[in-house]
Amino acid sequence: SLVGESNVSEKKKVMILGGDGYCGWATALHLSKKGHDVAIVDSLVRRLFDEQLGTQTLTPIASLQKRVKRWKDLSGETLDVYIGDICNYEFLEHAVKSFEPDAIVHFGEQRSAPYSMMDRDRAVFTQHNNVIGTLNVLFAIKELVPECHLVKLGTMGEYGTPNIDIEEGFITITHNGRTDTLPYPKQASSFYHLSKVHDSHNLAFACKAWGLAATDLNQGVVYGVHTPETFMDEVLINRLDYDGVFGTALNRFCVQAAVGHPLTVYGKGGQTRGYLDIRDTVRCLELAIINPAKAGEFRVFNQFTEQFSVNDLASLVTKAGRKLGIEVQTAHVENPRVEAEEHYYNAKHSKLVELGLEPHLLSDALLDSLLNVAVNYAERVDYEQILPAVSWKKIGSKPKTVKP
Ligand code: NAD
Ligand code: USQ
Image (cartoon, rainbow, N blue to C red):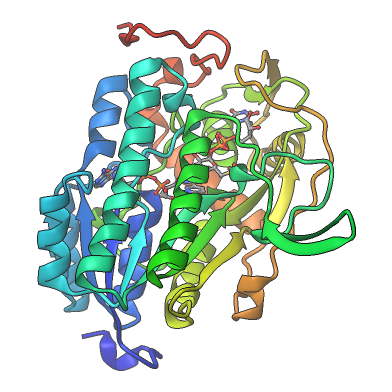
């Protein structure tokens, strides 16, 4: 067992909603390795989205059952598994009652902005899945485990790109001579990002009304694939999305470079966001869990380590490619989204560092290793899935069937 070598001060029972996904799987293994008792809850709907869209992760992922068995063989640790939809309250109630978590980490949402902008059906699905799922989690905690700390994934995209500094959740404003600290204004720009805003409001209210303890982690864009645990064995490998719907900026650029596709910079490329390495994601979750919010407290942490524009990322990947002998081109594609392409951006991100986060800043070594992973699995890449096909302006009410 790995518990012996862990530095855990207090062993916690942690339930991970969305534990079969990109951030969730890596976090489940990290916390298990650190000696916590971990349960995974997942409906496996993410695997179904890939089927619907006719795409697949760059890396070949094993079934959840195989993953969990291999982890048990390698570490001696058991991960409890509950397969079901958290929008189904009876299922969630059963899982929470039988596991009795000290902390619930909530990754279990539809997380793609383009997916939420495909058609009315998917916009409604996204907000229903995310908002109702989170409401169910709040009720389950209130009814069954009122002391349980909720660690909920939000997004930096809740804030949008205001022309002033972005604070961590709250801003102190003086208006007509009076001063108050208020929730930072939200200006999300997709039905997905808006679902996170709605969640944040529901969390804040539940903490105030029922005394729940919650941490909202406004995470930036995650990059990378390996963590020490998922790297232990190919059966444990994490997913890496590169397609135009679920792929995110830096991960996409590395895969594009590896297969000789021009980097897809949308519009002017000045869009600036917060980014972090997946090895920091798992550590941030651990820090939030071992330093819980108090009863009645609604905390907000901005979870990213560095800011980059899309143009910055393209030039970093171009340089890293050159070192590996890959000539990387950039294509400025028409921006399918409605967003500012040149703007001020300066977001605070000190609370997780104060708790002990030591960031893995984006380095040549990481770009090298990510490019190498992409080169290794290049034959799995479907070139046709790379260009963006979802337009924010062309969203319609008719279900969009994916063309063969
Ligand atoms: P993912 O799609 O890889 O994983 C989400 C998991 O949740 C999937 O396994 C899916 O099957 C499951 N799920 C979705 N709806 C569910 C439901 N109703 N019931 C049970 N399970 C359900 O996504 P990810 O990239 O791991 O993101 C995890 C969380 O972190 C999301 O909430 C996302 O919004 C947030 N986030 C992700 C990023 C990123 O760059 N990947 C950045 C910021 C925030
Ligand atoms: N972009 C490009 N080219 C690409 C892909 C993206 O220029 O090939 C641009 C987008 O237009 C956008 C920026 O890069 O301006 C980021 O896009 P993204 O697809 O990497 O990230 P986003 O849609 O914001 O969503 C991702 C995750 C989501 C999470 C969010 C964090 O999918 O779950 O909430 O990152 S944040 O961006 O901080 O809101």
